[in-house]
Image 1 (cartoon, rainbow, N blue to C red):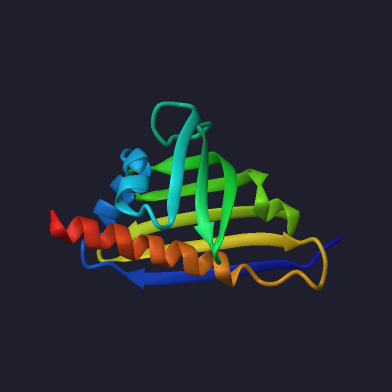
Image 2: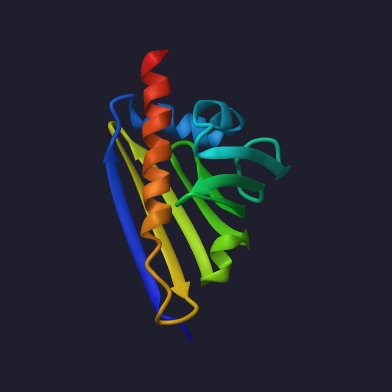
Length: 147
């Protein structure tokens, strides 16, 4: 069995957490246009918007490499502005036995929680991926503040 880990990052967003949630919940198809240096492609494979049971994939740039991930949306709660994803395919699964993400947006804050299990003790913490997500959030925030 690998080593389990948990990373949590909270970030203030001047645009308001509710607007950020709306991007990830109902307007995620706009993210490649908002942050083309980070996201190359977004696709919904099952479901029309992000809701429990939806399957989505991203092609993205992380650490100078093009990466791929496919997630199952386990829960989406518009009232509490939270989404929970479970990675089912992609580059991260080469390093981790499982990789789950929970997001929440509240007032001026967004919080991202990663829960994962490393395949070996030599596997690094997913700090580069977390940096990618925070950079993506900054791009989305900048876009929302312009509008």
